Amino acid sequence: IQLTQSPSSLSASVGDRVTITCRASQGISSYLAWYQQKPGKAPKLLIYAASTLQSGVPSRFSGSGSGTDFTLTISSLQPEDFATYYCQQLNSYPPGVTFGPGTKVDIK
Amino acid sequence: QLQLQESGPGLVKPSETLSLTCTVSGGSISSSSYYWGWIRQPPGKGLEWIGSIYYSGSTYYNPSLKSRVTISVDTSKNQFSLKLSSVTAADTAVYYCARLEQLDADAFDIWGQGTMVTVSS
Image (tube, rainbow over all chains, first blue to last red; front, side, top):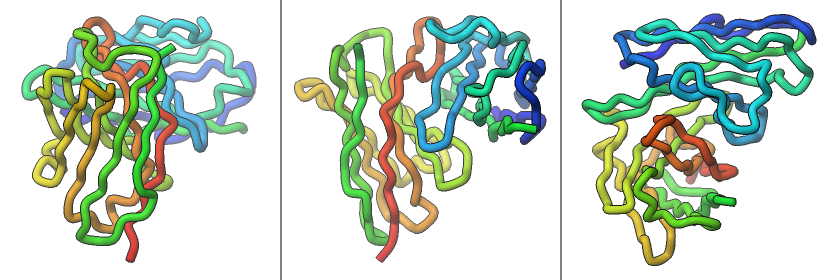
């Protein structure tokens, strides 16, 4: 299963609503996760099962979708949200993990 | 709280074998709810999953790396390890170990800080 993300990068301002899309090459039910990665740091899990917020993650982050199309939304972009975002799915059979290519969010 | 720490050489010669260990602290690697995985990230590029292991020793690997990868676990030391053979410059990357929660999340919920490995003579 392949994952694509769009856009590959975007420029936004603090306070903007930002939406990132992840598309799977075939249906994956709701088994999709989103990560945030800042330069020089390990990725951080934001959302799993397409829409469940990981403990401690601000509520301005939300996820939706099922099947092949998924979205990550940041309702009001904060300075600490400028980072690269990756989607990820785990395949049951054959077992395997795939990451999307990433979406870089930078300051307009 | 649970922490993961990668360790191993930062420089490996071409054609040799890259070896890294991930030490799990603050919890048991033998928990039934989790797999453990290796992920890498070449400089300036995206994340690539390498493979995952259960505490019983059950493994699954990225098909593109499978012929060169071995992941093993040592429950007595609370560690799991990665060996990548016949390395080339293309294997230069930051290597992360992470916990894979497969009960509800199907996601890597705890990560090590990562270790940079350079392949060069």
